[in-house]
Image (cartoon, rainbow, N blue to C red; front, side, top):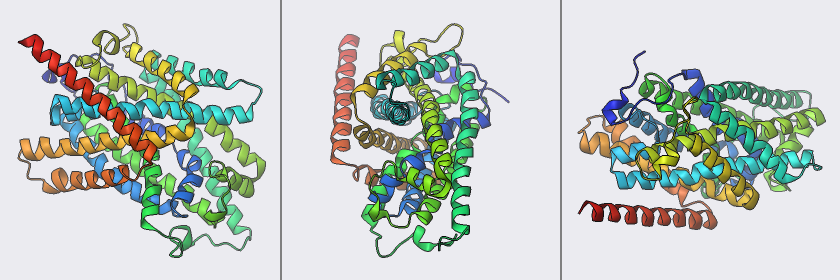
Length: 444
């Protein structure tokens, strides 16, 4: 396989090209997490009036348009930085910074959310251990593994993917067994997917906003562009494969969950309802096993999140949009963006100890959706407007549909999420305006 010529983009090849297609798919699946459909099952059903299956399907369609756009942009610019790099080169540097700034909100909050979620379950399981100790028990190993290198992280991700898939299979087979042994249920029920008595389109879309939270992370595959050979082709395929596999898992969990738990209106605690279902279909053994997998899998997903965030920071630091000496520094032995990784670890500790899980879950989707909109715009500008592409469906229609769906979901988010998100973007606009103003003054 031939390596990508980074010199043509003005960069040196500094990362080791060691990752395979399997590593990329697993990285994306770990970031999206097969277990997320379980942790979000109750919230999504309450929000969507019992239509979590349709909410996941709608979310998948929204992500598919954008996933195809990422695949097109990584072919044109197979470099680290992901959303930031594509918007910077596909539109202009200022818009690139704003897109990267928006995605930073997403990448900052996802590891925090996972630390809080996992530590909360671990604390309930081991209440004698202080909560802050559990936070450190997640952040420190994750940071250390990422510093050692992406190869070590890839091996850890493979192991955790197998464990999570086994947990998903255990849940599904337990649900099938429960239905077949005689509880007045059928394996095939249309109401587990669509119930005309409770269906509401707006509620379903609101539920799909939570589904998007599950899909956030497929784009993180592109942050590893400089660590694989033939990255443009390989990364585009890896994104689609990871999204398709995750969708099958999400739909299966949601369908069988709805099959067993038929009335969303009696859900008392949305956060834990699926574990009540686990006890119902598999007893305490299944319930404890799923809880333990959630506790451990949070670390692996945070591992992928911190890795992706550090590559985004590296890309912005390399272009001197943020302090280059800190964020573009690579470890002399491991060739990893060490200071960016450590920075993410520190931010993760502070955020996990000060921000509630509810607030994080409300805010985390905003940055991702904004970044997705920017990438779709980049495809139109780079291929159709600048490149005069004749592939209208792929380079115009698909990204426009992605923009429409992502914008609709973004404005369906909670008021808190929109206030925090737009405030974050406003700060980014002020920063980039001041920075470019001073550069112009210096050049004069």
